[in-house]
Length: 356
Image (cartoon, rainbow, N blue to C red; front, side, top):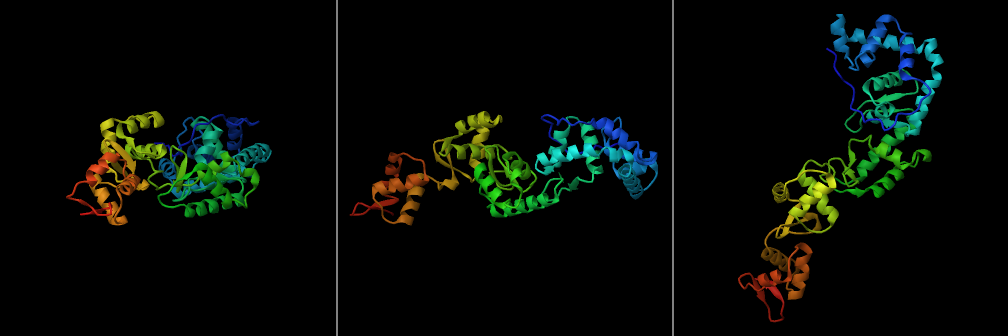
């Protein structure tokens, strides 16, 4: 049975207007291959009535030959087409395809390239076949660091790969950057690349080649493994919401903003439970949560006051309130009530307080 092996593709926004018809061109090119090779090429690239692409093993099993023999027949068929008069006469079509890829930056993620070339799988298969045939097109396989991609400019592709690797190394494990700052850093790494390529659209396309650099829904960039980038569930959306607000928020408000901002359904109780379980958040008031990275500390107010006095030494009432508010979102009166509890704090003759 045929197996669909094509990579996921992004839907075409609007396919480029080429002067050639891909279906007619592919049909003419296939006709230049020997019958046996033509049948293998049709099966391998999904160029028949079905868009499914068969593996070497599947074709070999159906034909009673080895996987390696199928590969040889496929290679011979491609070579026969490349050596044909039809291929030579199709030079202008391949030049158009090359120019289109240059306009996208010279190196493009495979799914974006194919998705931009055609809206349906059969048409994408035809363009994939043309890319494999053309001598100007080079495919880089998917690796741990990069997605599968095609390029028409080997030098530029090398510079982009190296720039992405350096950019990744410059990022910290848990930090995120605004999009503008990330783009500026990327441009610094791309000094040797043709300035004509240095547009926002192309820079973002090149960034999408990387598996190790990514962005979150707020267009903040960082390492793909960063918790603020790798959005997995409600607690991660809550983190983004509170961080964007820049101040403590009630869990019910966080729930509402998650729905409004990200169109994610979240229940108030679920959001509250997620905030409680995640040490990125600190309960700083009745249902109010802040981010631990802002310096807020967990624990009851008494514990926070004690920690402040142990760290800062004797402080006046006013100084205690200032320091506590730096790490807890709490009313003045609450601090004073705790500070006047003689079981835990002592007021010295100079009016300053110490932990008892």
